[in-house]
Amino acid sequence: MRSRREVCDSAADPSPLLSTHGLSVAGILIIDDHSPSRDRVRAVAGSLELPVCAEFRSGEEALTRLGDDCPELIIVDVHPPGAVDGIELIRRLREEAPDATIIACGLFDDAATVSEAFEAGAHRCLRKPLRNEDLVRLLEKHRAQAAPYLT
Image (cartoon, rainbow, N blue to C red; front, side, top):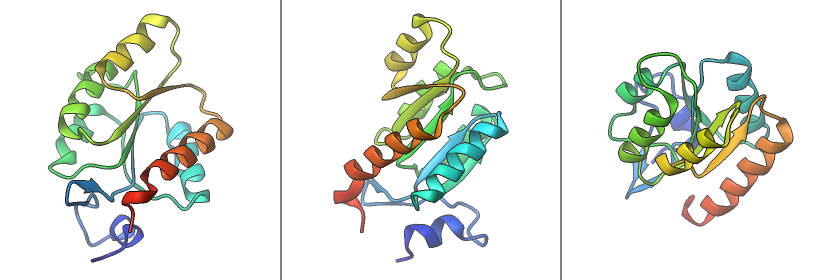
């Protein structure tokens, strides 16, 4: 079996997401149209040696390409472009990837959006602009919780 990094870094594999016995070994999925946010998540994850296996600019693209495999962590913008809004995207991701941890990111101008994100299935909300220290804390906590399942 290939390592997580090999799966995520493989250019030959058209579907870089991989699940084993119901436990995801895929890494991080980013859904955000804002390239600086994607860049920041990718850089912080890389510094912690956590693979980012896929990035999508819209919810539609992510839902179409997610397939049967699921990442262990999904970081999703609550205001993506396209027909699927962020709250609906979180609901659908929860259905498609029930074991994944979902982190909602956005400006969160009101408490209602935060509440809707949690009701839809988000585990945590991060305010934009994303800060390195918040991402480090979040990713380290996720890695510590996932550690018993990683090989």
